[in-house]
Image (cartoon, rainbow, N blue to C red):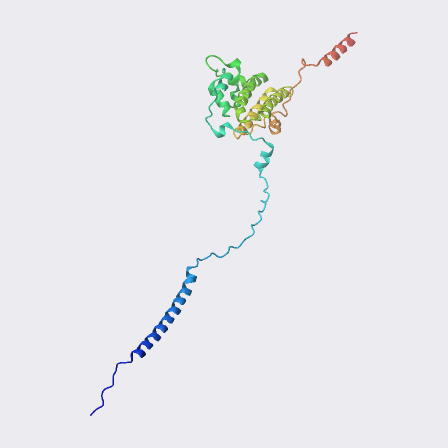
Length: 264
């Protein structure tokens, strides 16, 4: 007779004890794992901070190196800056006050003066003696060229008056410009006592043309000077020849005394 099979049912106390140990180990492992995960999450939840900026000392501003002035700059140091009407707007509108001030001068002539298109040969258009009802005669230009000092100075004065009136609003320092205008007239009068009129007229045409070109670029400052280059080309060698009837009172007295002494 065989032995009875052993009973495989474990003691309930032993089974309960093993189960509790396993639970404690599991709880301990879970706690350790939870702590490790928490340690890993802490740096991830910390906001990233930008690295501190390096403080760089500002560079010292270097003074710009002096630039040598060019030829036009050197010239501009001695020439006043005047606004040119023609270069800014070739079609300048003539103001009503300018027209009323010079109501005897044709509008086309005033526009030509203001825009610096008025030539030296056009001065006869400003001479009241040659201004008729039917316009200017064809021989007026020739009469001006063969005329006298007064035939240039009188219309030239009107020309300067119109030009000065036109540029005055844009040029507060109009005084030196006007002084140069009248200084030029004075130089012509001085030349008239020394040189022949034909040579003076050639000087005037060249001088006027040169100044007109300068004014187109805003330079009105050269009217008051004597152009030595033009003077040497046009006036030198053309001195007036003293006429016998143009003797000074001192010479006349000396001649009279000689005549009396010779007759006695």
